[in-house]
Image (cartoon, rainbow over all chains, first blue to last red; front, side, top):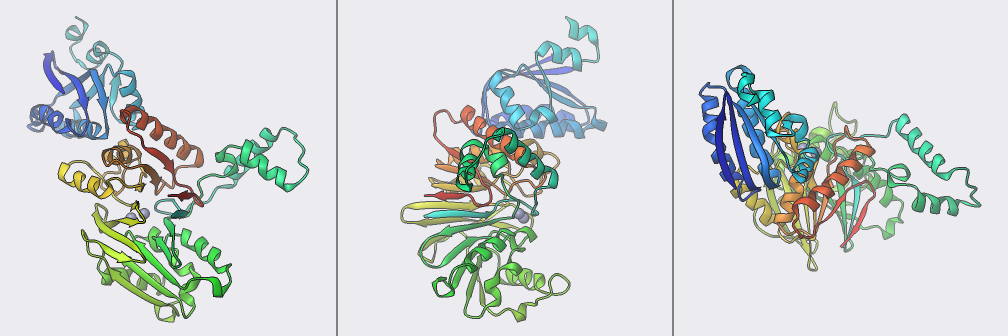
Amino acid sequence: MEFKTQQIEDVTLIHVKGRIDHRTAKDFENALKPHLDECIAGDFKKILMDMGEVDFMTSAGLRVLMIAAKTCKTCDKEKGEIAVAALQPLIKEIFKISRFDLILKVFTTVQSGLENMSSTSAGAKK
Amino acid sequence: MRLRFWGTRGSIPVASSCQMIRNKVKQALLLADGQRFENEAQVDRFIDESIHFLFGHGYGGDTSCVQIETGNEFMLCDMGSGLRRFGQHIMQAQDSERPKVYHFFMSHMHWDHIMGFPFFPPIYIAGHSIRIYGGHQTSVMEDAFHRQQSNPCFPVYWNELKADIRFTHLEEDRWHEINGFRIKVMRQAHHGGSFGYRFEKDGKTIVYSTDAEHKQENEKETKAVIDFFEDADLVIFDAMYSLADMVTIKEDWGHSSNIVGVDLCLRANVKHYCMFHHEPAYDDEMLYAVFRETKRYKEIVSEGHSLQISTAYDDMVIDL
Ligand SMILES: [Zn+2]
Ligand SMILES: [Zn+2]
């Protein structure tokens, strides 16, 4: 699993690549941790996960996503937010089967995610 | 070895509503489409061959009770409302032909797992021997049964029961020999604790693991579950919730999800995963949809490993 972060205006865009299963769930959790720690410290975050290059995911990986989403929400009067974008077809199916599509915001593309989440439209539209 | 499921529902027994029955009849009539039947046998054949499981059968609504048929003494896991039907069934046999010893393996003492006991005829008949085993201390088990058989829960009190009833605590993490089986017990995450069982006999292994929340937050704990399931021919698993429900509003409610069951069984090289302890709010259509989705999830994540999946229904039989 690979993990790369980019700040676009007020949205932290995280590109994830590879497999997220029981073998890599801990790495995934550790990689997300600094961002969630900032959240806990009161600095609310908007996190968009670009899942375009995630080709395998199991319940162990979904669990980490959920913990991240919960942590984001509990900070600073629920202003924090986490969303996913650009799911591959099979990952999209797993989101539907696990009902994660009902509890996490899912955007078709990274661009639409940025446009939707960014409060400064200038940043999102570039 | 044969397993017979007398009750498969979680938390509380459910019955089909009038509307649900009406819908089943309607679907059957539509499918028959005016067809004439010469006799009942033809009708039965039509139901078996032409009507979908959802309309000709359904999942039933009794709570946890699973029989392991083998040898000449009875063996069952849990005493949910399904035990009432098991009791009715065995009382039909000639008294002289019926074994008088019953071994019960209790996951825990929650209501839905003991409520069949007062409706189980052998407890009222002298000469019957009821052996109740559990991972809990005997005092915990006795207390639950005594309270159920007392005012104001039930009109027949514990001291009025005629059978010889004994409780046995089974220590965790060691093998026990009971009724020709090697049996191991595992503590599970659930309110008040629950216990899973691994039964081995004649080269076959069955795991009964209900009312357990597998959070997968600690790999050491998850690995212990996988070791317990390892290479089993059949794992009966608490698949009550969707994963989203399990990790959000129903977190710490003590149950697992359909897809966590797939992941654990795949890792443990299990042959057959049986979804169990169904959500009482789900109707037959919903349970069937979840079953299909679970099989689809397995296709996506199994990477060529084989795993048979079934979803338990009342009166289901599995031969091993
Ligand atoms: Zn239960
Ligand atoms: Zn329970």
